[in-house]
Length: 277
Length: 83
Image (cartoon, rainbow over all chains, first blue to last red; front, side):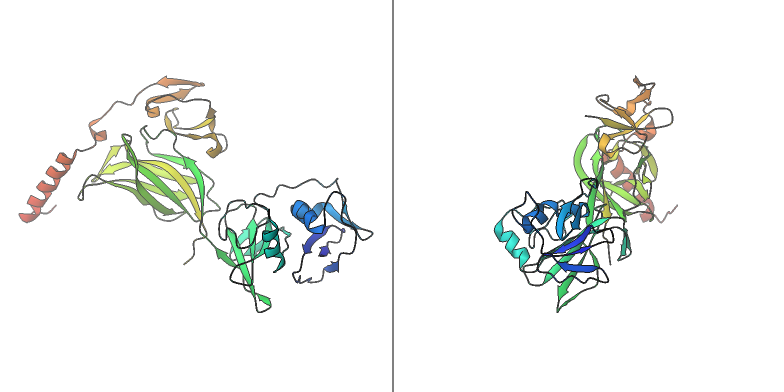
């Protein structure tokens, strides 16, 4: 195992088999003892890899500084080989020797990134996961703390590709728990500052709760419509628009008349990110 | 289970969601009225039954009424009349 420490002596990165570009930091082969309570260094890494910042190298040995508080780092768990590429849910830890060996073949490491700006998306804090993919080479994935997007780069021919924003992320933001109630014109306050668009599911009416409409509206873009039909000629609709502070619905219309609140009932709002074209 | 109310200025319930989706300063409650919540206002921590009178404008046209409207429009088009 090799490691990099910061100026305070705390571990920033560790590597098992992977080549770490040290970039001015100290990259050192670890020759100290296995910390007490762990089977070996890999066991230590699996259990403490998300809390490296609490570990110092003291006289060549890994030493826990229990005075350093544990940080919250959502979704930052180790990923087995080729598992769940592109998803955004927390991953399961390595549980089998086969999974661990698969990762060892390519090397793996992780570290926390405090502030980065990649692919036009700013990340306050995140985790870097490295794992091999079945087709060969490695993929490195940055999981930001907001879990709204992930970025990825690939290792081949002894170099990393550029970072790319991957995957379309949908996050469940709101649910109407009384869809049998009239839904008057209103704004649903939501923090949409980290989303590019919203997806709204709607039902035909308070008396017909089958989902009949799926409407995509860009945040800050022109309004869209929740649409319903009674036959191939007649359309009812409800205008919907999104800003960074919420989603606004009109009453529903039939022809050119505002007819009230009982049709085109929004039931779910998703936030969407990761759109590219 | 907690719920969050989206209220109009007069306390009229506009919609209800789970508390976990609530915005800051949302009104959180343990329960909400059965039936059409839009018939209620939430005033001083209590639900007041105050249904909005149904108006002709809120009536949803039937298929027969829509077809009749379309037939009338079609007849106008065929006769060369436009608005």
